[in-house]
Length: 586
Image (cartoon, rainbow, N blue to C red; front, side, top):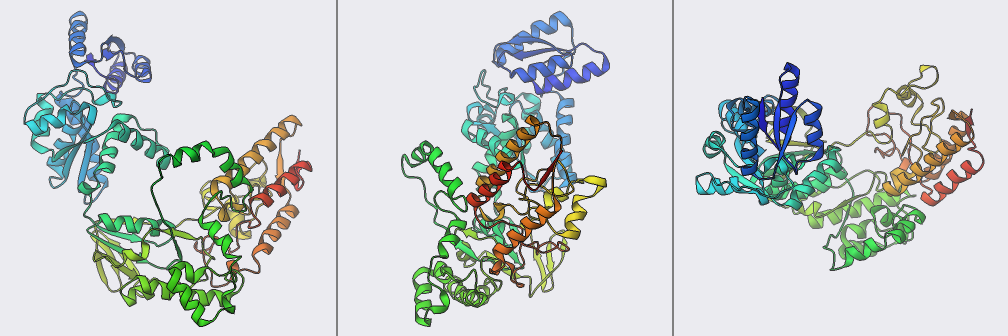
């Protein structure tokens, strides 16, 4: 066998040849990633390098083929390769109902041609878009010109998309592709970063190009009937964005939430550089702040509220003026809301008045007004959330009055009727602080199940870092840690640093096990619970992920530590300095 390739096709052909005991000769650009060359060699491929241009590749290949007599399997202009590439689109059709668009990368055109082959046959209504780097845009220029334009040596990070179209692939592209969209090198890299940050997937540049063009051209892919289920933090922050892109947005709300309006602005010239230069000072300030905030955060705003005058001492005129002057924040910015349920209920009434000043429709405004105590759930920041419900393309469905009965192929059926949708976004919350570990079958002494222990006894732990009966298990951000009421990163860093120091101590002193003692665990839980006993956080009307009330069957108890990060660090250090008091070391 013989071929030329930047790496991916060469790896596949070498592997197939190796499985059959056939020699495989591959011409690769000398600039191809070393990892791809290593893979080809690992599969037995014999590499001849060429200069990074189409002309050099083809000329070098002609010499190799003349010497070896290998049968040529073209990397993309071969009908067999095109058919094989079409299986990706076939999986989309089989797995996704009502597919509207398909976006595939384009260089020589094998993948996009296979996509065209499949979708034109199995799903002819699906629009097909090709994605190409701006610095290797000969396919886009060919598409506009109506004939093949070939660049010999384009320069792009997407090394798999440097080759030009050929006659077989051009036939598919010219006939079936709706449009070819391009992305810059920076946009391609940002798409790679995004998939790593959100999905922990390492994506090579050529694969990231379709995501990059989707992010760059939202207007091409918008215009859908979208439903959002859930109005917690995720829902409230995405709803204004989705409303601006959807043909129609239907919000399915079970529990309305309190939100803190947030102003967003662009950085002033040089401001970001100044912040980066001050990172050491910023991080130091975070470590010493009760909620880990160096400047401003939702939690720091709540902390500042404690110093405000008590609501119950104000007159009706003062309360009305506060709402008229400061809107949402005027309704909530009082010092007694966290400890006095009557004051909290008064604030909820003011909050409803503030919402009614923003939302035009009175029924919608009433449905958006929460009834649970303010601060018993995590504070949510928003950017134009309530204003979104004044748009003509946004509808609120109050699930308390009109519950969901079923999800069907063309939408969501509620008691009142069918809401026809193209897309459903589930922003339905999570099982906080215990859910991730409960998804793993963690076993302790005697085969005890951590999942069963937390279900029966409640989410108990010592310091939020360990659980009695489960030696050598450290729980970062576990129940009983400050994470639920603080800057997550600042709280997490303390956990990781403490655990690292603990493991070093165990190794240095020859210990092989460390296990939380039940009595120390109970004492820690009692202390954490006592901190919130006088607050609305544990009021019977409060049902949130803070106390497990959002998960059916989960034992209710407040799971955070609210004395602040500095005090928590002091307690953890004190325990470590005492030879890890409250733990059994052996």
